[in-house]
Length: 265
Image 1 (tube, rainbow, N blue to C red):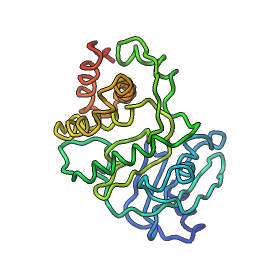
Image 2 (cartoon, rainbow, N blue to C red):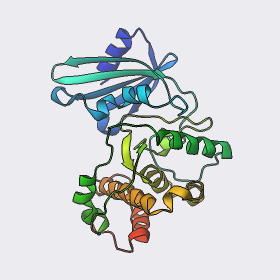
Image 3 (cartoon, one colour):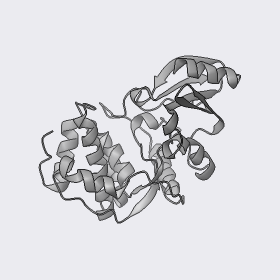
């Protein structure tokens, strides 16, 4: 990945600097490159392409500029041996994300009212974007709800267009920018906000602020469905050892919504 990053920087006539930022299981690697951010995505040669591979470029084309995010400046694809690489060169965002190295809060954050208004506006605009990208599927719910929530699968009846990875490492402090667009697409109403709320459960005042600002979504039948899907997916991640300190809080929140104990892994 480091060699690939250096290759891309050379091809794009950029000089990489600053700390490395690694993605899930080493699949991505990003570093600052001048006034840009250079991120490398890798996959087996026969697995390249598709929704995640094309997400950043698709967002740059289809999501309105009023949704604050880094603009895409260039894309470079190549294959080495049996590994495919994509380099994405985007604007560098100087405002730091709310968290680094973890998607979850471990303490409350003090964000101004304008920040919450910007988030509400951004998600509202994103919801109107037509797309055939599908980020969350009914068949995942059908396969996994009994295993992770202990309840029968529920039907997703209301979908919207969303970010699909809305957490605190993908949101900058003021002024707001939304980062990491590889997974955006259609998802259950309430999913994005349910995910952000779950990642805030160790920071109760911030979690309460989310529920207050977005009660018009979360306190509806459709919003509760989306939140349950988000919780189930997080419980799946927790079953693999991710978020060990957050896991009991996620399980408790799920039980509050379903009135059913979460199955023991």
